[in-house]
Image 1 (cartoon, one colour):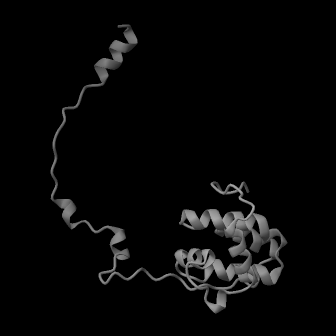
Image 2: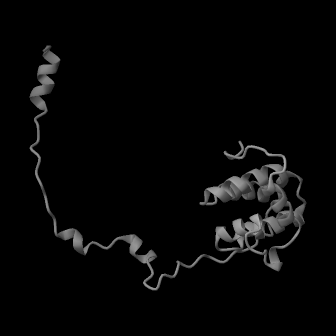
Image 3: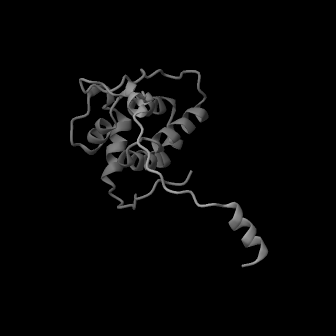
Amino acid sequence: MNVFTKSVASIVKPVPLVKCISTTCMSYKDDSDDLIHPEGREPNIPLYVERNEESTNVKRARLIYQSRKRGMLENGLLLSTFAKKYLNNFDDTQLQLYDRLINLPTNDWDIFYWATGARPTPPEFDNEVMDLLKKHIKNEDRQARIMQPDL
């Protein structure tokens, strides 16, 4: 061994393994306890608030982000490829319809089921944007959609 290795070895001493059992953690309150509901109810989701003061460019950027970050891979893939294909050509009315579609329902599975035709689309979401999304999901061009598009 060289001199440096000897000096480091003399400073670092092995620590014996000690088995510790603590009873203090039993009274520990985790912050996630507030998210557990005894009756199986889900936590309250904040109400959707329309952003009327947003510019069109800011709204498009927000919707692209929200289309990509769904928390559900299936919708992330479907909505991000849809947004990439259509959002730049949407007018203000279509942007508002799309905004309501992806932000009003509290359950992403509902959007997925409506768009794939597994469940009927409620009248408030049955519009031209939903029709485009349903057509996009059919993927008649047989495009590979295994990754989200680049930003």
